[in-house]
Structure formats: C-alpha cells, structure tokens
Length: 231
Length: 80
Image 1: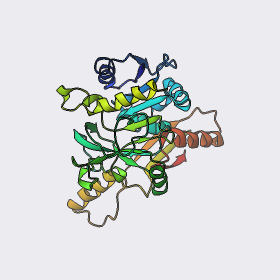
Image 2: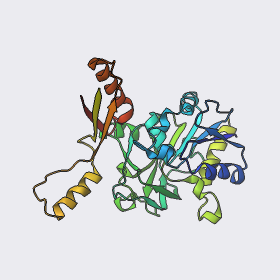
Image 3: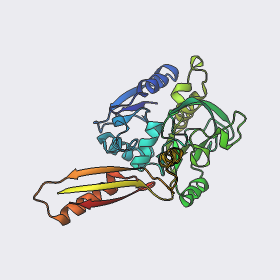
Image 4: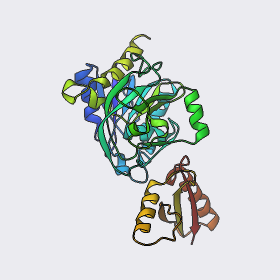
C-alpha cells in the first residue's frame, strides 16, 4: 500500500514516518510537498508531526490553508485513509476534518515521554488488528495536546465511538494521573464518524522498532495496510 | 483604516496560562485580582480606499475564519 507523507515548512517527523513505512513496514512511500495538490495515487496519507509554520497563530492554523490540504480533504471525503500524528492531528482539527481543538497542556510544559494508551475502538482501519482494551506503549512530545470539545459534542463523539485512544496506566486504567496534558476524558486520539481519518498525539512512528523501546506503533501501520488488502 | 482584533478563550474554556499569571500576581502582592485571562491582539491595516462597512465585513470574516478557532476562542474588534 502506497503511503504519502506530507511536508510543511516546519514539519520535523516526516522522515521518521517515511522510514517507518518504507524500512519497517516495507511499503512504498512518497513525500508530498504542501504546495502540491497531487497525492500521487497514494492509498493513505500521513500528516506528520512537527511545528508547521512555526506553530504561528495556533498549532496547525496556517497549514490548514495549504493547497495540499484541499486535496487531502477530497481524498478523505472519498474514504481515503488519513493519519494525523501530533502536529498532524492539530492540523486535522484546524481543517475541520476532525472535531474539537487543542489547548496548551494543563501543566504548561512541553511533555516528551513514553505513555500508555488504551485502544477504545478496534473496529476502524487503524486498529483492526488490535483488541479493545489493548494497551500500547508509545511516546508523546507536545505542548498543545490538551484536547477540548464542549460537553454535548463530546458526548456525541463518545456515542459514535470516535474516541480511539485514551491515556491510561500501564495496566490500562483510565486515571487522572495517567493524563499527561489535561485532555478531556484522557483522549489521546479520535477518528471522524466514518473511521477513515484518525488524529493522535502519540507518535506510532517513534514506536516502530525494538531499538526505540517499543514496536506498538507497528500494530497501527499494519492494521492500515491490512484494512486495504482485504478490499 | 486600522482594525484592532482581540482574541480570547471562551469563558467556558479553562485558561491555564491566565491562571498561572493570576497565581503569580497574587504571590507578589496583587491580592485584589479575581481572574486573569490571556489572549491575542492583532493590528490589521487596510487600504485607504475601503469604506468602514467594507473593512468591518473583512475583519469579521478574517477573525472568524483565520484568527480564531471557534471551538475554543471568541473575538472582539474595533476599527479606527
């Protein structure tokens, strides 16, 4: 399955994602520049982490207006797989491809560490090979990961099973202490209502080889690949 | 004409930066403060041949579509 990895000025995880797809997963991947509207027949798009446009105005707020995001929106509307990681998640929120917004972390500090996340929905293409309740060990590194949404909209999100990952203890318990950034209901990742667009703050590409201390990110990429090979 | 746009977090949204500033102000002796909210401020200059109404329409669109994220923020502005 061919993956496209977007590049914005200020992206800095695009090479990690490219490496994980090509070298670890053995799949073709191409970089796609933010000025392009050609997604090069890719079957999945990764919006990578970093500091697109220096995080000016709000994280992801400027990247949203890039020409490539128009193409990504059309791709998503047709059911294409779109994975936003960290700043990529923030860009998807600002683009309206996912609901909600990011606030500064509750502790006002950049948090960079390994966290545990629990799979809450294993019925989407990104988690098809997982089981609900599985705990993945994946690192985060962000300043604005405090996911916010008003109470009514959040209830709807939960009803639709759009909460895909929550921060948890290593045993899989959802506690306030396991929440690194103040995110509502420990949310670490959400999907759109049809399940083909996922945004997550943890970095699966940074948890894809034994050398990195965890290979749990591979489960996500493998699920994506598997979901399309069945079609 | 110049527009001054003020963007702030909605009242319903917790403002951790404002809270931290508030605590610091209390710690150094400003004890009468009941709340601090932090926001953003923009000065936008428009070409002189626009009418006030045109500027107003543009400012509102810019503030709504770009300067704020309506999920968490609101804005006010004045035109001079």
